[in-house]
Image (tube, rainbow, N blue to C red; front, side, top):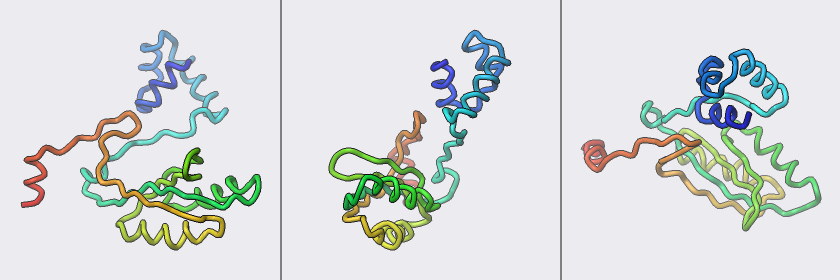
Length: 159
């Protein structure tokens, strides 16, 4: 069972027939298992990982550390509910350590992301500090290796 989930996590395009062959099960068993996992919320969605730079679309991505003023037991959940509903937010994590949340944000430009931080994130009354880290390059995401440009490719882009 865990093997099937691990396989699907890496490649959600596999058919029940392909999974059945890989896992010594019938396609019907696989379909039933997937349906049950979806019903239980174990499988939350299926995504395509896109290299937007190669697709010709410029995007700015940032990881933002957020510290908050702890005003009660539900402060985390209340703020998380607000933050996760912004369309710019790709991911949101409650963290241990020097900050409380890690927010992954994507926008069309660095300026758009910066405005999100100042206008929507830092303006929350319980937010006491933020630190924004812009992603310069992606080498690996969700088990998928991104192509690293060679020195020659980088020079050609500049010319």
